[in-house]
Length: 317
Image (cartoon, rainbow, N blue to C red):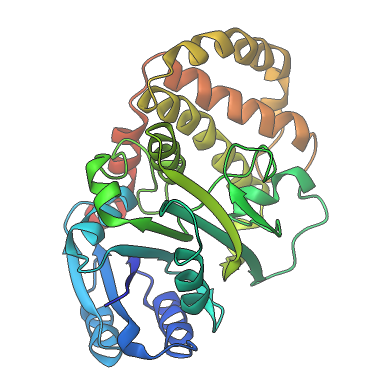
């Protein structure tokens, strides 16, 4: 088996079905890759089990919520050298597997991680008020090209997203897997688990690169295209940045940046008076949201514990 494709999901069988249909249309024979679905504490397992049977996929259950825990479980269950992670709401190009295998065969050091291109599939049009600089928070990567991350070969702020990412299984496990203190918990928006892993591997001397030939289409949910979601996403991103830097053994950069974030929060504090659903003063408000998440995490807020607790609330309500 050349490759294991891993889909991690929580209570979203409709999206899993679309993803599996895309995987059924691949240009390489089905025996070239295995399918693995990791159920991250879904309330109802019935439909997911039926989809796994229909598509000849193994189904692994993780009882605690958290995408990092689910992806780590997928790595431990994989029976191939490489594992390709795809989000449950992503649909692969028909040549997705073929492009991954071609990228892995390229001359040079074998990659520990490859990030791919993520194009949007809109459930509703992107609102005109949405800041153009924040398309990336919707897990969109549109850059064409290839090369090592954090070099001149790719844009300086380009980072891998777990919606479309290939990892060497042994390198992943040797690095300790995805950090459980970052990454999504249900609908909470803690992030950067893939960035933490990628930079850890790259700092250890492994090849970590981008290849835009590896393409998936991310189904952008209509419910995300509102000011409330954007502000929540930036708030959790501020906290994620702090946690990721600390996981990467760079706490000093957090303390260096904290005074600037405190200044931003003080300067923009009046923007909190604007209703969350409003689009007024949005540039100030998303910066304030990011600064607030950053400050809270820097000063000791246990963001991961809060995210896990929030993710469990619907099941216990």
